[in-house]
Image (cartoon, rainbow, N blue to C red):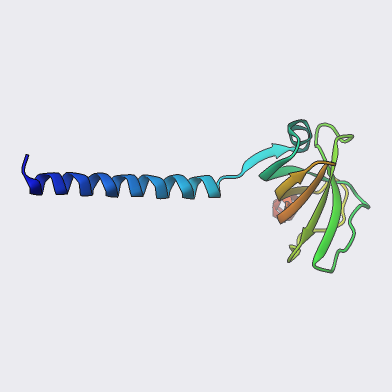
Length: 131
């Protein structure tokens, strides 16, 4: 094998490895595991997760500010609850309404508290066809 062929082969291998590492890092940082409230409680402390549940009515504190605290429960197990704290822009669709579907993304710590970096309030009734 000539010197030129060896250089081309080594260059191609280096480029392939670099592209593979970049893809691996991007996928690893961008992936978020999705849980229900019950699954999250069973799992214990975990980072970078997304949890779906229903808002426990009357538990919202700080609505209208940029710091929000509320409790969410599992759809199938209303007695399974977690506390959520969030700082940031609160979505317009987020209301203190019992059983409203909420998705929160962040880090779950010991003591059943989720420190959310993002929250989303689902509003299916808003998109139902008019009668």
